[in-house]
Length: 327
Length: 207
Image (tube, rainbow over all chains, first blue to last red):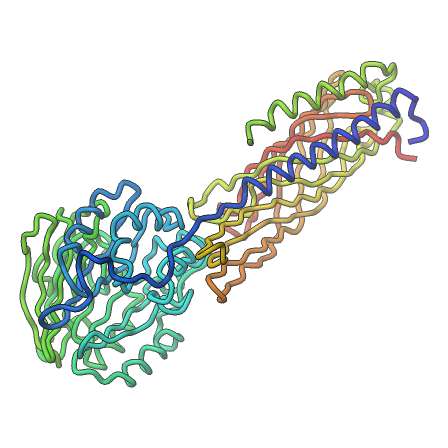
């Protein structure tokens, strides 16, 4: 550097100041624009003074769907209005907020629709939740109602029924970190066996996002085979899922998907919560009813040893109904 | 605020050019014969923005704004050998509840460093340097909900082809560095075209 002329030294001094200024400005810009903060709603909410209640006059009710709130949440608002008129517990079958299940998606798209029922909602996590790291916004938004953070599986009771919520993301990394494994030796499977053993209810229902069997465009989700078998071996009665944006009802099936009216589990696909609707592929074996191109919710009325179901579209028309006994 | 970077760069270049105009013998205007005799060292600061080519909106990009430095030497025959250190500040997403209590945190940022080689093409005060760098890239990430957290710390080898276009003002040069850090072991989520403002100093001939 000793070779520099006086003019060169001045230029270097000026440039050093300019470099420091540039660095300071860039650091300021970086720290101010790369930090995004949102305010979350309180974890504990009470029922609003007007509107549906958790308790029902008769037997308990659970109502819900999957694949719910897109950025333009017209469909989600239509199904949320259905919920406005139905007492009981609200359940979701994953893909609660689109497209990437960010905090903004939950606070705005979901929050402005199904969010008014968050106080009575027990959700399941879907693949779109994993478009955000480890589905973090999902767990932060739903708090303890979604179970322990990052697991996505938990259980609870409604009346005489035991409900199990599973995470069907099955170690698939859709974005930044995947869900827990679903194979027979996985932590989730061990938890499920222990939970079912600890809750020997007469009636058991389970729900998660990816359907084990489906005639919809996504088809079967083989990764849930082992967990389906665990439920089947424990004589579970009902399985609810989403992912395919349609409604489909299956006959009771055993652990291999073979029709079994004595001990089989009846599966419903209810991906009709408000997201863009899909069409069907040719019907899957044991598929009994398919409703295409209609948003709606499923309503289960839980009796002591049986249940009734209704699929209600946004025009409040019951498009499918029936009943079954627990085993 | 990001738009403010462009006039900032021009203002900086203007300031530098005024000081440089007074110099008679710009090292940046070396003749072919001088280049043939000397190897020149240089250092530079880089500041800019990297954007992953394949990402979900919900992703916490480990790139975005970044700054770093480069040092190296150009040999008489035009070849360049040096090294780069870059730190991208990445993203912080926060969710607070009930008076600012942090309930959701997702952060990620990348740091990479390694050698690079290139070739200097000079035309008067203009320098054009295609180069390729490589080395170790570290991604530090964390997601927390309440008191539970998950770490996403990873280390990978990267390669970064790019090109530097700079204009000389005496011993000082300023320009733009365009590069694509690529992590061969990863998906395109870790491929992030990045544009950098570059301001540097030619330190003169290497003894």
